[in-house]
Amino acid sequence: MNDMTNAFSGPGPDAVFAAYLADGRFMLQRCDDCKKHVFYPRVLCSHCGSPKLTWQPASSQGTVYSTTVVRRKTEQGGDYNVALVDLSEGPRMMSRVEGLAPHEVTIGMDVRAKIIDEPRHGKLLVFMPTQGGGA
Amino acid sequence: MKATDLRGKTAIVGVGLGGLPSAPNRSSMEIQTEAVHHALTDAGLNLSDVDGLFTGSSHAFMPALSTAEYLGIRPKISDTTMIGGSSFVGHLLPAAMALQYGLCDVALICYGSNQGSGFGKLKSMSEPQTYEAPYDPRHPITSYALATARHMHQFGTRREDLAEVAVAARRWAQLNPLAFARDDLTIEQVMASRMVNDPLSKLDCCLVTDGGGALVLVRSERAKDFPKPPVYMLGTAMAHWHRQISSMPDLTVTAAAESGPRAFAMAGLAPADVDVVELYDAFTINTLLFLEDLGFCAKGEGGAFVRGGRIAPGGSLAVNTNGGGLSCCHPGMYGTFLLIEAVQQLRGEAGARQVDNAHIALCHGNGGVLSSQVTALLGDASTL
Image (cartoon, rainbow over the protein chains, first blue to last red):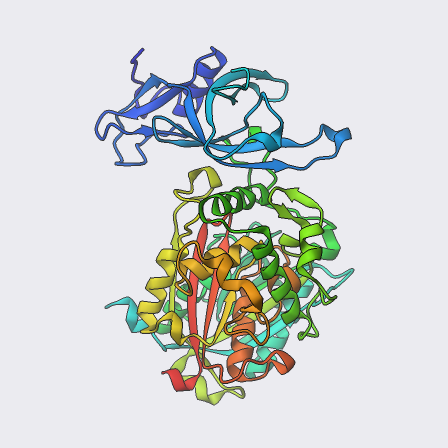
């Protein structure tokens, strides 16, 4: 899987990323020139400015960079986790870690991406602990 | 031509506050206008003298147009650069340039909001970020909580250290009759307050209040013609590295690490020269991050630095002498209040909270989610 989309025509990177996700695939852009990965999806490489960004399957491996518990009343759904995950390819993204209680998510935890069906957003990327969390 | 050419060329000759500590049944524009009136009176000027307008808003899409129409003025130049709460410290730069090039003669920086009484809760014009919004971060506290958690993990910063910041701010607020929150506050009370986004509790968060602030600026060559002692802009610098927290390169280092050194370089000053420090404390972690990034202590040592009342009244460094966003006021955006408090300190008119021998003040504005950083150094006539 190495198809390159034209940077300035056709569906833009946001739409391409969403279409991949809707198809159950987590894809990342990688720059043909500086070889670095880019997230969130962009028209130009945010490292070097090149328009030569190629979609590649993500490793789906990551590490929790920071984590918080958003406190919410039980009747509104209860507390939930928001985390920043550093992907093994380099970029960082916001997500949440599932498969354990929100406060049990710790900085440095190894996690693996999972695509879920979310009532409000359709397909959504979340993460599960790589070990011991039912990944 | 170089940035240091702007050192000392612009003077603040009028400041005014409005709507403090609260202004029920008054609109944001009415609160802003009260502040403008007080600033112009302070400067001995009239509305008709204002020909440069530098403003921002939490409610108006075209704030310069709304403000100028309401005031009945016809500016020759306006700027509404929107970089969040730091905008108004940032406005010092276009105002100084416009004055210096003769594009205007009297520049007005102003802001007002009835966020405390009017909305009842925090309301933000900030648009959801596409790749963060699906995870339901609460804007802006979730982002600041993530930065706090990382600082604690990396440097061993404790919740008690954050609480120390809130208590110091409250002790300054108790000396300020216009401050919103003046009840006694202990570290234990902060620690016991309701958790909102771990590790930030309710009392780690800034207030949501009404309030307005305005400043009048002129070229320094005219500054002695005004009733109050002028306060000079010695250096100002802006830096921003991200918009959303997931794009912040290192959650323990803000762009203040760049804006601070550039502002100090323009002013020809160092942190040890500063007598009074006004930092944008939207959350308790801000104060620690900015003390570190601006060079008042080493990276990671902010928690240890503030222990034992060091930044409280009577401590070795006077920080947030009006009570800050945590205890004085925070009407959506706090930037004008940093500058106004610094001016009052440098004029020696800060009453019970006056810092002795205050000649140089540092104001540091923050906007977004630790996103935009603007550092300004102000000084009295002895610093020129």
